[in-house]
Image 1 (tube, rainbow, N blue to C red):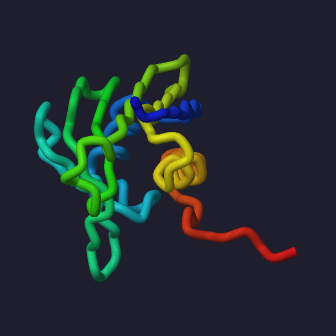
Image 2: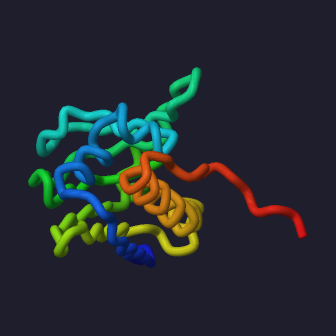
Length: 154
């Protein structure tokens, strides 16, 4: 029986350049500032990438492969929890499309081939909006949001 999948698409507009947005996704020193993680790879097609928590223990949380790269307009990577790296069915796909749009950039992040109702699908449905808001804030103002903050109790 084929697995049931779901996907998410997020679009945001950022007052920046395609080059700066692409760098913010692929350069570990920039990503850690708004994401709290570093995306580490040599960024060549077929290369591995790791999503490493930017704290003292430097835990590798996610892994995958660079599927397609066309700086500064497109990046496609596979994506799985590091603990499930050996399971081919655990991988989903993330596509970053970066388009110059007048004096800004339209960033579309598509995360597809997720197992429906999985922990990963649930996590990314909450995670991507915070990460992309933080990226936008960081590139426009120099200050990211706290993506690890929690709602206040009522």
